[in-house]
Amino acid sequence: CDANSFERFSPLFTSVLIVESHPIFQILLSQAVRKMNPQVNVVTSRGSKDAIYYIDQAKRRSISSKNVDIPSHGFDIIIISERLNRQRSDSITGSQLLNNIRLEQERIGNEDMTPRSLLIGISGAHDRGKGSITRKMAMP
Image (cartoon, rainbow, N blue to C red):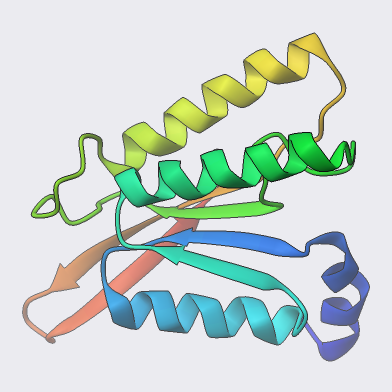
């Protein structure tokens, strides 16, 4: 993508939730999103429990504002690491969180014309031989 592509798509999203247990990937993903749209509101979470809290808060704000253009889960884009660090007190994995949101969006979408959040799942693998971590992205 070139700079013109970023300018063309940046008005389409104003709020992003990043759910990632590793701080370095939170920072990198936040920087990448802000490069596409410097005015975007980026919220980060280290686990599913906090992410659910932020989503609930965003949904409440969207309901109280009565803005029909706000997506069903309060964020235009939700990026979730499918392998959240299970050392935290989270009750569900990133994959489960992603699936729960997708199912709820399908249910809500069938009831009214509320826009859906764009869901992006990322997964990582540690290459022990090279000492590096690779992240892959997919949209359900």
